[in-house]
Length: 191
Image 1 (cartoon, rainbow, N blue to C red):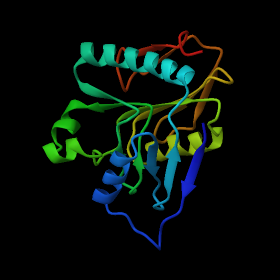
Image 2: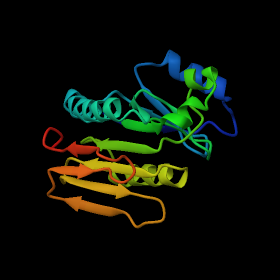
Image 3: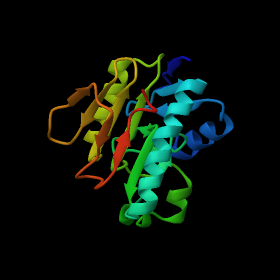
């Protein structure tokens, strides 16, 4: 699995509509756009990472259904961040009131907001520094909590606004309190 960065500007400046159409006709790739307008093209994940991400989504979805205060989203969901980037975290959660404030058209496209909570799962081919920068970007754009789960080193990097990044190793679970009260991710199926 590899990631490619394609610079378009100033030769080509894609509108939101054009970028959305580009992503739709290239469904075999995950395409993100950074704040500088560069396209980040990623191939689909391998089966091992896909299964582990599924286990994360399963736990988040179960909690979100029980809690009812927000909605969860998978890695194929795009979000238009306030800084202009289009990002797709591996898992995300948005408070229900923020979601319901969006128009039906906004909900059907890349939602113009930054999720309240994001998770990125590092696969073997992912660059750790690039993922750390991506998590910081989420926090800088409004996320209240972000987790970067690094399977290679069995560590979780925890991001919160106005706080230094915390790195926890040798753990079997992690709590999202107080941002997502009661959500505890069991890391055993992830490691």
